[in-house]
Every structure is written in structure tokens, then in C-alpha cells.
Image (cartoon, rainbow, N blue to C red; front, side):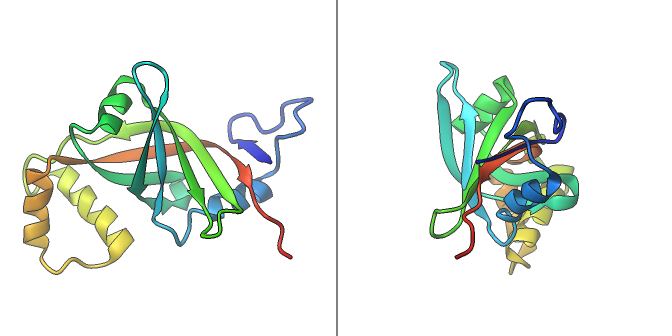
Length: 163
């Protein structure tokens, strides 16, 4: 298993800490995919898992996820901003888990607010152009959507060697 931590890569005696090369391989699993599993912490300390669509911004070490207010994952993140995210290859042999803290945008309240603008950015980066942006803006407000921004601080996982 590969373990990396951008804040503490060179701890003495920790043979699981790797160089950026391995971390880059793990983070590469995020590229070209848009679905993974978000893990948040429930009030009782157990994990709450949600399948979600995401966009990865490698230059910022950031995942963005569009969510609806009132869902368990949002309530959990408001209480405790720590989260983990799991992504795997189609065959399931290679995987990465990313850990970090999240920021939550405000809930979309008006068709022209900053949250709706960011939701449009996320949609475009994941799906391309929407056939009716006015309808999309209205839906984001009606659904009370917001964006989860997961800042990646740590990565671990397994990259299956090529055969």
C-alpha cells in the first residue's frame, strides 16, 4: 500500500511514506473519472458513505461535488469537516483514498449568486454544456444545491502493477 501525506512526507522511521511520484499515480486515478464514494463522519462516529459525482482540479488538489442541502453528508460535514473519498479503477484492483477537510459553499438562493456560478463550473467541467442554462440555474435554486470542496491533504491506496 502507498501512503502519502503532503504535510509530513519525510517522517523518520515511516517506511510507508512515499515520494510525489507514487502520490501522483494515486491522484491520477481521479482523472478521467467522475464517480466515487464520499465518506463523512456521523454523529455516533461511524462513517456515512455516499456515491457521488465529482470534478478533480489537480493544480489545487481539490475535488468539487454538487450536493443538495439537507442530506446526511451535508449535515455531517457542517458538524465535522473531515472527509475521505474513495475512487477505484473499473476492475477494482487499483484504488486511491483521499483525505482532507471540506469547505461548503452557501446554499444556492438566487439564479445569479456565486454558488450557482460555481455549480455551473462544476457541471461544465464534468459534462460540458447544458442545453438550457436558465433551466439549470432555476433547478439549482429549487433543489437548494451547494458545492462541497474537498481539499486533499493525504492520499493512500494501491496501484496494481502492469502485467
